[in-house]
Structure formats: structure tokens, C-alpha cells
View (cartoon, rainbow, N blue to C red):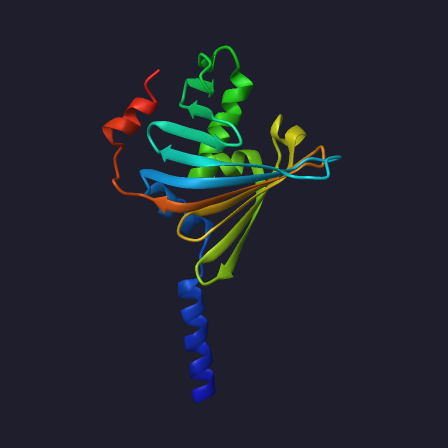
Amino acid sequence: MKKLLLSALLLVSYAAGAVTLDDIQQRFAAQQVVRAKFQQERQISGMSQPLYSSGEVLIAKNTGLWWQQKHPFPMTLILDDSHMVQVMGTQAPQVITADSNPQMFQFNHLLRALFQADRKVLDENFTHEFSDLGKGEWQLVLTPTSTPLDKLFSTITLKGQKYLNVIELNDTQGDFTEITFSNQRPEPRTLTHEEQQRFAF
């Protein structure tokens, strides 16, 4: 009887501690602003050595995504609901609008949805397999079902714990990209004045 009771308690404890995709969505939805460092490794089919880059990223739920590569060369990418701005070093900014390139903004919308684990967008564009890896760690494997995503990627895998820690991109050409995030900082919960200026263009 004691063994049966202990087994039942362990089962309840496991169920209570199991992480679900809905849990992740709620957790990410509560994160208004997240700042982090990133490292990217890209393995291109036919190339013997991978390509590396690193920098900083800022995800603001109601504003957009700011991505600043520092190495191997400076490049800044800014995404909001209607604009994409790319700045290469000291060159003049290149601005693309949702009207001029709707396909790019479909991908932009998806990219921000990945950072927020937006269940509606995920359900519309992927089949997904969620795994609780234990100790609060989880993995979400996304297989694209909509065009053009299914022409670009075989799978997109997200891994994390409290925050999104890793994005793995397997593309249809056989290339593989891994982006690792570290030093995530949710405070302050609103953009500073300097951060607001990053989106002013």
C-alpha cells in the first residue's frame, strides 16, 4: 500500500512539474522585453568550415526585433510590423516595407512568433512535436506545412528553459544553422530611451 501511495505521489509530482507548450507560450507572452547575446554557427553544404557570427539581440513584444551582429563584421537588422531595416557598417540603411515585399514580412511575422512561442501562428504554419526534457528544459520541433516555409526549411527546432536558448534551422538545401542565446535579461520590462531610438527610422 505504501509503495502504491508513493508511486501515486511521484506520478502527481511529475505531472505537476511537466512543462507543456501552453506553459511556454504563457511564459514568453509575459516577457515584454528580452535582451540577450547570440552566437551563430552556420554549416553550409559543400564548405569544410562553418561560418560564425555573434552579437546582441533585443526582442520587444509590442515594438519589434533588433538584431546587431558585431562579428565578423557589423550589421544591424531591425524588424517591426511594417518595416525591415538593414544597416551594413557605415552604409546607408536599406528599408523594405510590407507592401514592397510581403513574403519577407510573412517570414518576419514568423520569426517574432518563434521568439514568443505564439501558438496560433505555430499551428497555422507547422506540425510540431513538443518534448519536456526534464529540469525545466524543453524542445519544440517544427515541421513547416505552409509555403514558402516548406520550400526553405525541413525543420526548425527551438530549445529552452526559462527563455529561448537555441534555434536550429535545417534548410532544404542541406545547410544547418544553430543560434545560441545567452545572458538573457528581461529587466527593465519597458524599453529604455536609448533602446527606443533603435527602432526610430
